[in-house]
Length: 203
Image (cartoon, rainbow, N blue to C red):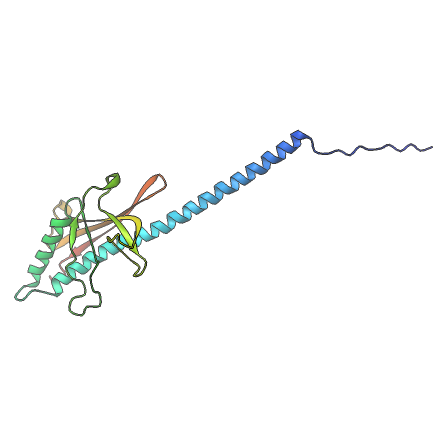
């Protein structure tokens, strides 16, 4: 005579269930941390790219300002006088703590003078001891300026500094432009700089 043994159905114990939940929770948390880091890195890369373009733009505007002084002379003025006027102007405004310029109101389609004498404003110490005010983004034109009305605070600050009096740049026909953009992301303050020598190219 055969005797059949009955097997009892076994389920998960409480300890096994808790261990499974703990492993699942750790996996989800790890994935969220990785995803958060990826998004943070993506945001940083995007803002750094924008800051790079803004810093480069600072150098370009100073170059255009130099060319305006030299190409569009006052009656009876010599090109060397125009360079001296340009150098004196930018060193006076931007030679210390640095300066900023506001392109609001400039007409870039003007035929007589492509870049008018952009008004330079000496920076003052602002929040977090970072020089120069915030740049605002104009969604209609895609430009950055200092007009807060109807525009979005970009979180970027730009400082233009001129070096002309130190040992390396005592050449009367040379100045050094340093364009730096600052921004805050998370708990850190970041900056990126572009620099270039501008010369009196009429010589």
